[in-house]
Amino acid sequence: MSQQLCIEPSWGAGRTQSVNATHPFLRCLGALTGERTSERLTSYLIQASVKDLMRVARLREDWDRAGSMAPRPQAVANASARLAEICGMAVKAGPWIQPHISASENGDITFEWWNGPRKLTLYFGDDGVEVIRVWGIDIDNDMEHLHLQSTDDLAPLWAWLYAD
Amino acid sequence: MPIESASITPVSDDETVFRAIADESQLFAIDAAGNLRLSGSAFNDRRKEPSVDRASMVEGAMASRKSESDGVVCLVTGEVRSVKSVVTLDAKQRPICAHQVDIVHDPVENNSAHSVVRTAPTAASESAFRRLKEALCLLANKAGWMYPPASRRPPSASLR
Image (cartoon, rainbow over all chains, first blue to last red; front, side):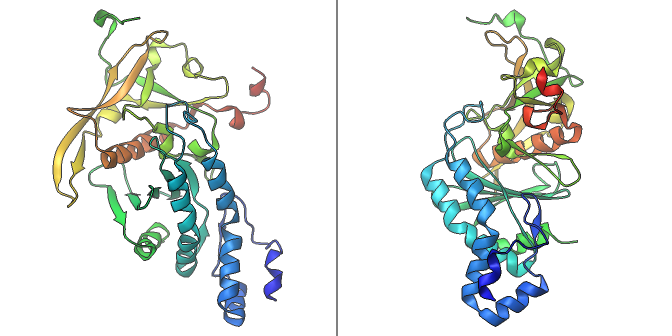
């Protein structure tokens, strides 16, 4: 059964759609087949994001016609290295939503997720990850800037983003 | 070519400004309900002064495009100014400097409408600028596209 993951699931994997990894079938599959399947599942879920990240990695200087630097290879590597971990964290908490992947003027990689008025943006520098949490327009009172120490720190933010 | 200071005029609160957005999928998304979701990258600027054009000084949103494929969004000056302060925090999250957000007329060669979103008295810190970009996105998302980028235009519009 673990060989069946290449079958396109009927619940969709569109670019802006969520992939609900808490689907009962996937839970059973994980319980039956263990860690290796979990890794394969994560690898499957992040396929589109990996492609998006590679597309961003190929952007050149001034790609946005605002004079931005080309994405730095170290920042791309940092984001790439953490993508599976972030997906794994999301799968434990609920749905995996593919991030909107872009780059800042300094060549940092950004992952963005929206849910109604709530938004999370991750900035991947050469090593660390910073987070901007947004729930309104007031820069001082409706936004928060955090330094992510580990992917585990993202779990409560993810829960906040997708809370009812 | 130097721009004479006499040609620089104040931008009033009720003035609309346009921001050209390159037709790059990294700069915007459309949510399931069809609403525009600008990426923070749509206001990228290495000098931390995103460029805009005064609507009253250009002939429609299309005139603000730098390329035929660009889309255009708008901001209302008073709303941008109402962001009021962008507080820069130190490493321990203590406020060390508050910036006022403004839109300032900054004409350049070949574009007398050119203006910039600027923080005073100094440029915002990295963190403050990232939050400012989020605020600008929220303001621009409200009105949606003034003119959509080529990839979002109906087939007939792309023949222009």
